[in-house]
Length: 289
Image 1 (cartoon, rainbow, N blue to C red):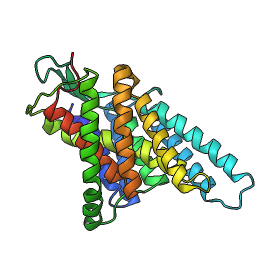
Image 2: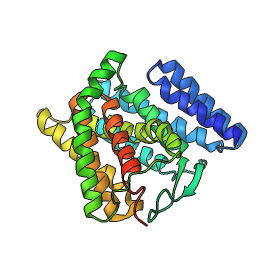
Image 3: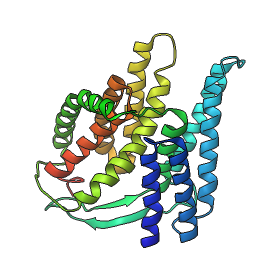
């Protein structure tokens, strides 16, 4: 387990490196992959899949920026779809070589709740890092900018949390259940820097951002992009059933709204984490059994 912590510690350093420098996050990600292979946390194939993902990301960026390319829109669309499909396949661990690591075994947080544990998927986090590192570095550049972004995201968090919790209660998916658990000390860093970063990196940092640039009517494109990204975000939560898909789609609209309003991934991450933390601390988590 100690060697596993080393691998994911390096992966965490790669996440933080997105706010430092490309060399830092790239070196930390490479070190995390090598550590995982040598310690058995990853199969050597994992390095191949991640390298292919990075190559597809660079190919997409090159086609997007080559304004003299014949049939540029066609080639860029094909490259974007290829990257998106591959990224989803890798994030969902459909490619061999990745092992989901359980940090905390499932436990019942309150009476009537389904068991909940904490685990980390390496490929999902690596995908978020590559998108924000190579395709769209939509991160803040200073503490003052972060403060402004979070201030603009705060009212969106309030609306998203109220609407989202109303939806899950109305569906009978959760109930009001204030509580404290020391498990939250694990939940906070893993959910914010691994789950929220990776999911917002893909759905807002890639899907929503790229679709919003399509066509000449940017207002229409932005609305369509926000909606499509939210629907896709809901659909990838199919493992939780129809109720979970609906709840995730509603929440995704809030995360996309925060991203649209600020143009920074931290806003979407903050609203996403805020809603998840509200659910964890004040309502039955993850759902009623």
